[in-house]
Image (tube, rainbow, N blue to C red; front, top):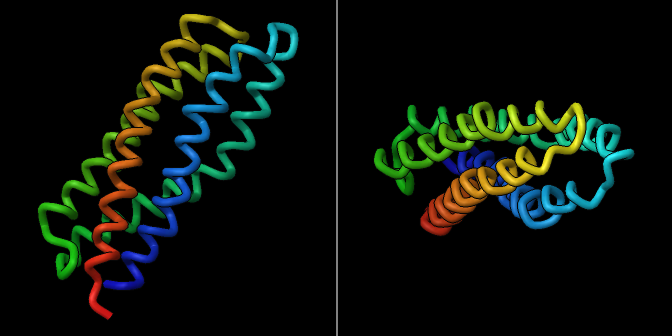
Length: 144
C-alpha cells in the first residue's frame, strides 16, 4: 500500500500546487498579454503546460484506479471511491470546460471565454485541493 500512496502523493500534490498557480497567477494574467501577442503566448502556454500536467494527471489517474483494487488500511472503500470521484470531476471538467475554452482562446483573446475559463477552473482547483487533503490524510494514517 505504501508505494501506491506515495505514487498518489507524488502525482497529486504537485498538481495541487500547479492548479493554484494556474488559478491565481497564470489564467488571470492571460488578460494582460495584449491582443497582438496573445495567440502566440497562448500556444506556448498550452504546449508547455501539457508536458508538465499530462504525465502527472495520468499517474494520478492510474494510481487512483489501482487504489480501488487494493482497499486496505488506511484507505477505506469510501475514501478510495471519493478519491476516484474527484479524479473524475477533474478529468471531466478539463475535457468539457477548460479544453473548449482554450480552443476558443487559441484563435485570439476573447474576454467571455477567458472569464469562463477562470471561473470554471475553480471546480478543478477545489477538487485537486480536496484530493491533496485526502492523500495527506491517507499518508498520516499509514502504519510504518
